[in-house]
Image (cartoon, rainbow over all chains, first blue to last red; front, side):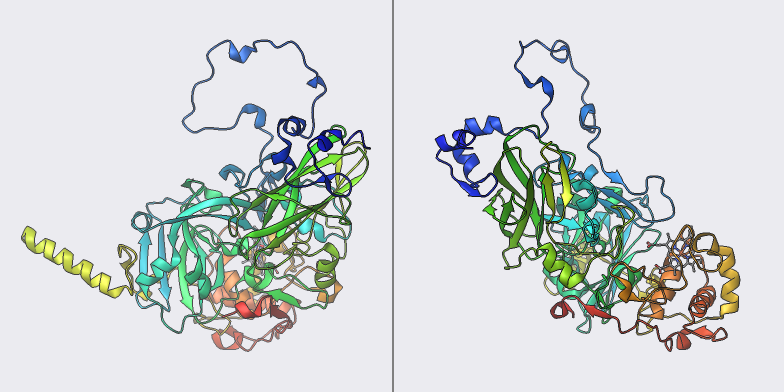
Length: 439
Length: 178
């Protein structure tokens, strides 16, 4: 044991928790010796040094520049996983491959999508947004008109109320972080604050809600308290700098930072101010978790504080004992992430993870913790706190309040309930394979 | 109109719309529209009954439309198939994953009317007439024993429907409710 610790000991680093977790500052202090030890998770057999050669791609002119770039052909496996690839008559989901990407924002082509009735092919020059109901002046806005309004940009995560639903299963399902947690993503959005447009329409004092509705086949509509409109709701036009893609609401969507994904109505065409909620299908029936006593939560609104480890995770096997970086994402509807703790022994002891700057409100925060795997069994977990003082519950706490599915779901894509924000536990076996366990 | 008077008019219009907006943050490019011109999109039916259209329908009429336009996905007797069942439902105390059905879960008959009119049939939404939607609503409520087979559904009777689970909900964050 002492021998295995030697690199770290030389750097004056002390374990921060049991089973190989080091102080979060280890990376920054450790310098090159640590950095070279912490590459990928699965290293091929040919890692031994060989004589270097000039490779074929270095000995001639490369490929032409593309008008719209696409990833290297070697990255074709980095893609969303689809729940309904043949578009059978039911909802379609595409999930973000969290274990195959890194950092804090999600590329647009990998951002999660849920479409209940497909993605409409909207001609932006014909699209209109109407704001009416309990306003002083009903108004219509074209996309060209909106382009003239003052805009704001912000990072925000977007999470489906049904994300991580596989973890309601009474037994852990063996799936990747993508399959389990792929219905959350994070992007930078640019658009016009809804409050700016409401200044122009005026607000009738009787208004308490607004109903947002899309131009898709389902004319999907959700009721949102007016206070969110006056806070940070945005008519988003751009995502990560380019026009929002069709699956995410082209040419405009409602963005309600931190709030349940389905409420962020895509293909937005109508906002009606009202004195009552609509009690529409998705708010009254779909995104309403049943509780153990047979009652149900409605108007969940918030995606509460949560974190999960992306590296390592199922599909990213460890190749031999040694130093690794544990990393993942944390986020909360209630502001910034304040702290993330990481455990390598199933939650018995904890070390504080480093938070990657910038730590932005209602956005992904990447956390990292140095870890030396000794080759024995380990159970990795993360737990997040937000600046409002909320803490991610343990699974036992969450289950005692919210219950557990009565049977194992037929697929990780099923939704036995919604709004799971408990922890995820990844077990590392002696063979380096990572599996999902409850701890 | 001379160039100058055009400019003056433009200035006046800008001033007028600036005066309209409480504190003009934007360029004031919203185009005024009359509520009547929003009608084609203004389909939301509220739990208070607001915006329920005129019209009527019975379960017997609904059964005919159902067989033609709905049964292929929801089953001949509502038992489900390609899409979810629209009849029956287990007690919600069976588990948090109990399938949600009209009978065991839906809080308001207005949600059923609104959803059917808005989104069904899946591939040809918003093609049903209001009478057809009333008839289908009557049919779906009748096969679930929520109304009698011969109750006519219209804007008045729909508001008298007592959904079994109407008191089954609580807001997750009461302090955030308007």
